[in-house]
Image 1: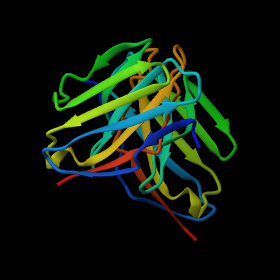
Image 2: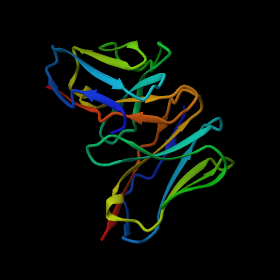
Image 3: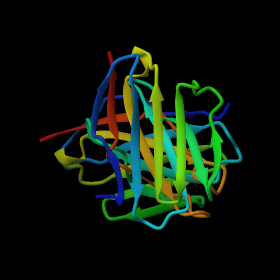
Image 4: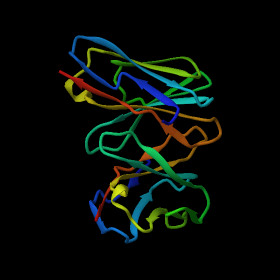
Length: 111
Length: 112
């Protein structure tokens, strides 16, 4: 059974702080890792993907992958109230995007 | 706008009705997916179509029936649904060999 685990939160951070979101996965064969952002009542929006161990930065977002420890994280620098959403971690082991999702972590950024 | 369009956005149906959800992608992708999102549960993959080949989650009840007439269109036919089928149904697409999936806006389904 492939599982992706996330703390459901909410994770509360003040505006301007760094938000750290974590995700662990059970399948060692997982190859691709994604972070989606989902606003209430909306569909998931892809914000980051990472395939190799290490860090990947895109603007205020940094994805970190450690395959040996089977975890992937998302750092959001200079958090803004508009970052308040549920962040979904997803992994895949195949080339056909059969994504396995975690339940998501709710992030609340207070002004 | 992600390039994946779903209709209708909202649907209320009785348990004896038959309805269909539609999805269309304008991204030139080769794979399309149906996901179900229920409250406090992870997104659940229901069906995958890649190059017109269907792969399904065996736990999906037969009252859900997918159809993929071509690589740009995907349907989900619904019949004799149950109240517990009320959820957000999401369509997604991806390019074969590229695992990034892009979602449509979803159909909020309520079964009464």
